[in-house]
Image (cartoon, rainbow, N blue to C red; front, side, top):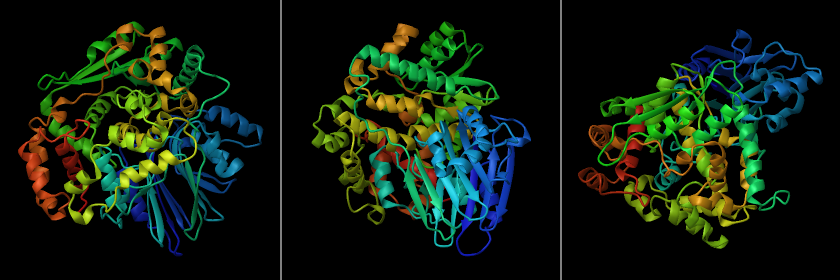
Length: 593
């Protein structure tokens, strides 16, 4: 897990090495263990390294293979790198390191851009061909590892974080009206390729981009499950439970590949508890687990320690609990927002940031349960969507999931930055209509897993953990497990108020109290309820001179929000004030004027 950056020139000039140096340095937290820059011809690459596999300097990056005539930078982990290495050695390749980065380079030399189809893992990378000047960019199937881009007629720049691109300079920071519409419709989510900044885009997940020396490029999406039923498994719940249990066991085992200790973020919910149980069944002894709680606000509890302790005791883990007092939140908010590549409204980003700070003192790799709710239909709104006819799926999805209508989005924004059409509903309608997806629920899960999830929970985990040089791995986003879950009959996922088939697996190996508990989440009550001093920070941001000059939101609406924060809620109960303030605070934090 690392940070990468680069520049490719199309105008015959040399790359701006000073800009690549600045981008690379901006990502020091992502890779505190090493740094390197390489340049040849029209291409320059930068890298910050977090040592997880091959801790020697042989694994340093940028990595050059002189025999193949390529240089690459890589962020992530290829879990099957040992098997691939053995295959490549059989094809005549010789290795100088024990790293998965070198396996990627040899795989590219052997199979070209089709190498991505052989990689099991999470990754973003850039590979430059010395003789042709061609550059290949790639991103993993679920978009677990980020890759941001900014391009004009003269050059392309890319980096693992958006702030790194800003550090390079020359970025168009005007606001994208369509992205703002999505942000305010989908609780802060802006799916690839957009970001809230007009001049910054994201390489879509499951995509390879071949960039030619003249600046032309072609994209190829190399993976997309069909979300239709599989004849070989039928509808027998027992068969599906066993097939999914084996796939999840494999997914967890894969993510223990490391030359450093591996821990687990254990919230005490079903998903993280299953990971701990399966690791225990694999014989993983001395496992470290980590949980965090916050002080209560009003009637809302701020921790779930009872459940995490149950699991820790059952499987004899070395369990660590961290209780965060409310007076730490103002400073934590600032640092968490500073770590965000894009603005996020989910208050548990603060929790992940604080937890990662503590966990990074003990381990460099953790497994977590993110993605299970999207892959296995765990959220409460899925039954409402599933009940609609296939033709009505887009409207059912919007009614159940959207924060607000197009009219309400327009009313929040200044007319100069408001989209002139219902961009978010059009996006949903287009994805719902694409081929595949047998049922309404299949279409909704395909949209969530392959478009929206990447830019909310997945990005949140990456940003908050990497801010402390901590690698987070997500077994529920193993691509083979996702493929199998995509084919699973919807009724098995919707059963038992969601994630029914996972709960059946859990009952075989977990305390029943953990499996049958009410659905939890990562609570941060002080943020959820806009308690002091969070409210003071929000008020200061929205009334600051920068906010008034930007004039992003309707000022009368902002005044009403500040006058009565508890009253103004989205259709799903979230704070409108927090959504508005999160964007403004992020823009101010990153110096975007």
